[in-house]
Amino acid sequence: MKYPTFDAVSAASHEQLARWHRFLPVAETFEQRNLVKFIGERLAKLGGITDVISKKIGWEEPQEKEE
Image (cartoon, one colour):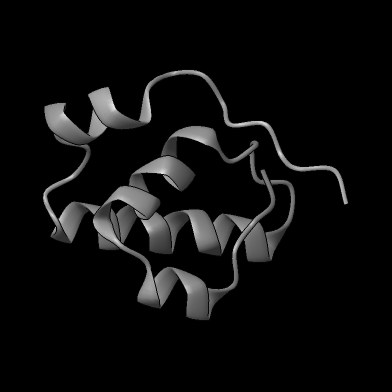
């Protein structure tokens, strides 16, 4: 899974934020760490990863499509 842009995080749904929070790889750069922090802050404001969202997104990381 690729890291989103700050604009994408700003516009993301509660579910999308939860997916990123659960499945993004460990941040390696300063910008990635800031994105992870921003995702966490937005997700917390929306109520975190609820039981319903957790069940919906599951624990299997989605496979990226080959381009």
